[in-house]
Image 1 (cartoon, rainbow, N blue to C red):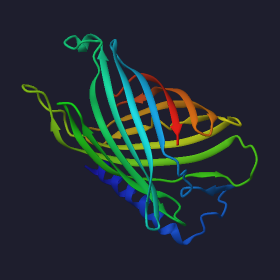
Image 2 (image 1 turned 180 degrees about the vertical axis):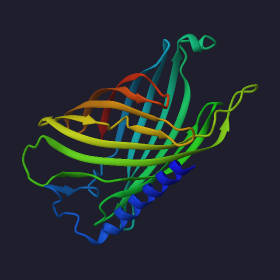
Image 3 (image 1 turned 90 degrees about the vertical axis):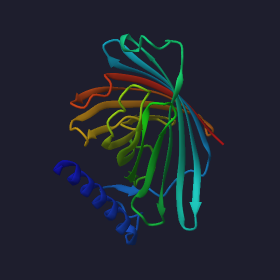
Image 4 (image 1 turned 90 degrees about the horizontal axis):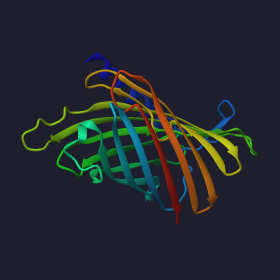
Length: 265
């Protein structure tokens, strides 16, 4: 499988480059931008998310998600731990055997990332555990970085924060009498861009939904994704967003809308 091996090789080349850049001053401007990968809030953050996803053929998925961020510091390594848990409701012709009013456990997800002072990026990993009797475990590494304008004052550009993650499935399971789903192998790319619409308002592109390459069977899923965030005060932020697929040789969903309430403490 030439393409997946090439993607994995590229992924780890990026990781090596980010870590080896530790010897360079992270505050030196690059094209008018400074690296802010090691800047992170020390607050705890609790978020309540709601999603409505249309998969086509009148099939829909509604998701309620709880997401928690916790600072994680080990010696001179500083990072963040993120914990997600979700309940989903499936409706439509393909879900006739399921009550349309019932929510069932979906997945639990743990993500940890961070770095050291001077690094131009962060490295981390994610693991996903199925909470129901169908699905599969997934795990994989990730690399990310972040840049913002070097000049002070109000800029249209808030930040550029790309992230790459490679997830591999294992321990697939299914209901009795049915075949387990095929093991996943995918590359996830988030070319996140933040734009300032006002002193407390941002438009964030490809922050929540990124592009995915299906290394197991081939095909791309590429959406247009945008989320408007409004900070009410230092402890409260609300957001609403949506995504629409523009390339879907790898089937995921047709469109989705979502929103969140974020509490910092």
